[in-house]
Length: 569
Image 1 (spheres, rainbow, N blue to C red):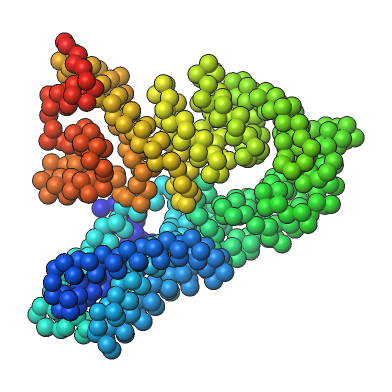
Image 2 (image 1 turned 45 degrees about the vertical axis):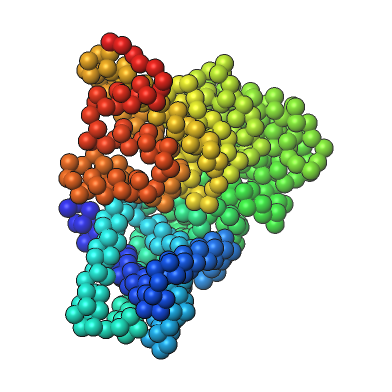
């Protein structure tokens, strides 16, 4: 197995696998302890179910609060090492409580600790461990780690079979086993932290991963420290890479090491430093950036002009009149920033006219890349215009197809909202670009809230289109040409991409392959997964499209029923 070979050869990935395996075993045992003690204490099934439901409900609420208020701050202040220890240490305290008292409330504390910290702090910390993993193997690695998690569940069952059934340890005494496993878990967490730092340093040095493919919600303390060290590298490529990692933090912040780069010998580094300080709204360097509009490099002058158009009281056109020699797109984006910035005397109509002109340049092959980059740098102030052009059916298709990528580059909640409102498009390729951009944005920004109703509406429309394809296929006696087969594969991919937007945390890829499997157990498990995940309406329409046991004729009959009409051959 290729993924096993990859993991086995990497100390970093082995540490992650050990961490996941031990956490799976311990948390499964903790769940069993609560159920066993509840059964012995409450006896009646209704009371047991009510109690377990109450524990799960309150745990979910506290977990959400922890995710919103604690996780990011803890990671930034104390780093990944402390974050990885929060869950095992809390479970250690819970296991000791159960071992000493053995009461129902003690078991609830143990289980509650798991629910609160696993789905908030621990999940974020574990996801951060994947940061140094190269993008080309990340999917394989994560798939293997999922297998490790399932193996941990099985190992927990074996553990309970030996100690609870064969050796007759009570639920209270099982905590002794948990404490041994927790000691191993804490050791694995410390090892994972060491390997994370070592791998991150090595990858930065050799520039072997692409940051745009490994976005994480927050850069923790250790990552920030490692990156800051690399900003002093004599290699300009390493510095650019480290600056790009700084941009990955969604709550951008200035750093002394970045300010020092304003005088770096490389114009690429100087430009990138100005861009980050602009996004971070660092006003402490304004006077220094004023001098940079005389920089020898045109791109650096352009970036300085954008900064000053946003943070200085002077009209950027005055700088241009005095100094001259600025790139056309730099002038236009700086002028838009000045005209449309909030809280001051503005000329929104003039700014919008210039912005519409830049969007129009997306149709010009020689100007499109520079226009797109300049528009993306405007951030939220460009979204209204981009959304209007994307939604306009009379707009050129070449322009509309480039807008989803620009919205992804902007990457704000408003950008996600603009994509969600344009999920339903008449042209299939444009639909895919919108869905794909929203997929990547939601994966990069796990805390985005997207209108669920918009996604479900788009998903139903895609499924209806796929059923329509089966009707058309029926008129050809079920014989599809290469173009038709490709179109139907793309329809199915769009459906699953939309479903991924509804269930970001679920492994839908495995469900898709499982339901197409000829192995009856795998097939049944995948069906059960979807049955317990999807709403009744979505399940009734989606499952027949991907279930290997549903015949072509059955799908055609379902298409006739769902669409309300039949296509005769």
